[in-house]
Length: 158
Image (cartoon, rainbow, N blue to C red; front, side):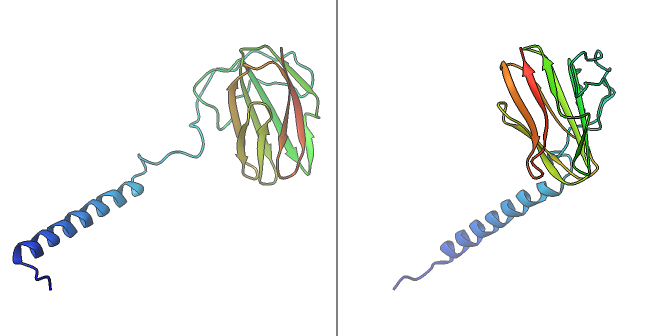
């Protein structure tokens, strides 16, 4: 049989104490709000971008609640209420290389998706959700909601 010596017991106790201390130290980090990743981007007072000349839906220069500090070349804002899209579905044409921000406010929880760029944002009911990206791919891309399956507009990148 194997008999433990006082040194083996002390070593085992120290190992267990060290492991417990590491576990407790690691758990405390989750409670620190400065470590947490925010679910939405911080708000800013970004200057409005130039007025859009694209057909409906219109692009606006109004920064959204989830806007980032980066000024964008094109801001596209859409509102969904009772399955109606405002402005109505259409095409928005942008130039390749422009920085685009799409902000959507829905009256029901949903998810925004930009096809071709594989970008998305959660849309809590009544709270704007945004995606921001560089239009670096040319083509025609649908922008839609997933749960309600609404096509918000088609993004044309030239």
